[in-house]
Image 1 (tube, protein in one colour):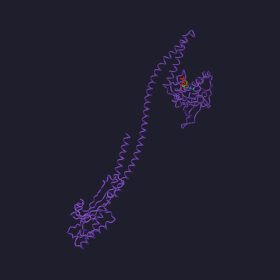
Image 2 (cartoon, protein in one colour):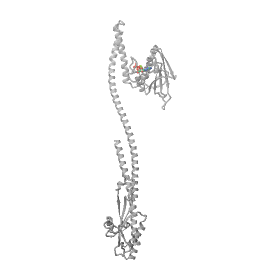
Image 3 (cartoon, helix red, strand yellow):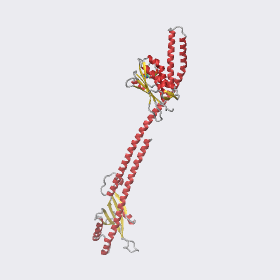
Length: 474
Ligand SMILES: Nc1ncnc2c1ncn2[C@@H]1O[C@H](COP(=O)(O)OP(=O)(O)OP(=O)(O)O)[C@@H](O)[C@H]1O
Ligand SMILES: [Mg+2]
C-alpha cells in the first residue's frame, strides 16, 4: 500500500516535472516569437514609409510614374531597400504587384516571376497589418532533441500591404497601394535558445524530481523494513501468547490433578505411619515395605505441595515484617541440619536487624528456608554460610530497600546451568524437585523485590534478595 502510494506520488511528480518544463519552454518560445514579430512589424512599416518618401515620391516627380521595369528606377529602389536592411539579417525581400508578379527582389534574378507568390500575399492584401508565418525545416518538437540547429531551420516570413502614408491621397480617394512586401528573417538562433531553455528546464525538474524519488524510495524502504520488523515481532508475541495460554491451561489442569492427589497421598502416608507405629516386630520385610511406602508418600507429598505452591502462588499479605526475625526463624529451624553437616553460619552486615519490609512472613520464611537448604545441600562436606543483611540508601519516597545476601562456600552454581536455575523442575539433585528457586523467585517478585543468583569471585554461590523497604513512619 505504502509502496503503491509512493510510486503514484513519484509518477505524478515526474509527469508534473515534464509538464512544467514543456510549459516553461513554450512560454519562452512564445516570448521570443513575439519579440521577432514586433521587430518585423517595425521593419515592414519603416520600409513602407522609406520606400514611399525616398523612392516613390521622387520617382513620380522625375519620371511621372513608377515603372520598375525601368532599370534606373529599379536601381533607385534597390539602393533605398539595401540602405535600410543592411546588417538586419533580412532574406528574400520581394515586392509583388497586385497581380502577384514579382516587381522587385533583392535577388536580381527574380523580378518578372509570376505564380511563385506564397498564399500570405493574398492574405496580406486583405489584412489591416502584417501577416506572419513561420517556415520550418524541422518540427519544433523534434528540435527539442537537438543540441544545435543549422541556419535557416526556422524563418519568420512577414507579408505586408504597402500603401502610401495617410495624407498623401485626397480624402475621397482610396489610399493607393504600392505593392505587397514580403521578407524573411532567420529566427533559428532565438528558437535554439528556446530549445536550450526547455532542455535545461526539463533536466533541472527531472533532477529535482529524481532526487525526490530516491528520497521517497529510501523512506519507503525504511518504512517497509520497520513494518516488517514490527509484524515479525507481533507474530512472535502472538505465538508466545498462544503458547503461554496453552501452557497456562495445561498448568491449571495439572494443578487440579496435583490437588486431587495430595489428599489420598496424605491418607497413604498417615496409614503407613499408623501401621508402622502399631507393628509389633521391627525390621521385618513388611515393616521395610511400609517404611518405603511412608518415605515415598512423604516425598511425593512434598513434591506435590511444592508444585502447587509454584503453580498457584499465594497473594502475599501486606504486614510489616521484621526481616531479620524471619531469617532467624528459618535459621533456627535448619540449625540441626546445618550442625550435622558441619556448616558454620556467619551473620554480617548492619547490627540492627530490625529492618522492616511490607510482606508475608510465612512466604518470606519459605523463601529464606529454600535458599539456606540449597546452600546446605551444596556443602555436604561442611563449610561456611555467610548471611549479610543491609539496607540501601533511601529512595525518593524515603524507603530503604533491604538486601539479604546468602553466600556459601560450596562449588557455586554450575556455569552452564546459570540460565536455567529459575526454570521449574530444573534440578541437578536425585531427590530434588527443581521447584525451590522458582518458588523463591515468585515469592520475592510478588513482594516487589528481586532475586539475583551468581557465583562469588572467591567461589561459592550467592543468592541476593532485595526487598522494598518501608518508611520509618509506616
Ligand atoms: N547454593 C547452591 N550452590 C550450588 N548449586 C545450587 C545452589 N542452589 C541451587 N543450586 C543449583 O540449582 C538447582 C535448582 O535449585 P532448586 O532449589 O530450584 O531445586 P533443587 O534444590 O534441585 O530441588 P528442591 O529445592 O526442590 O529440593 C539445584 O539443583 C542446583 O544444581
Ligand atoms: Mg532447592
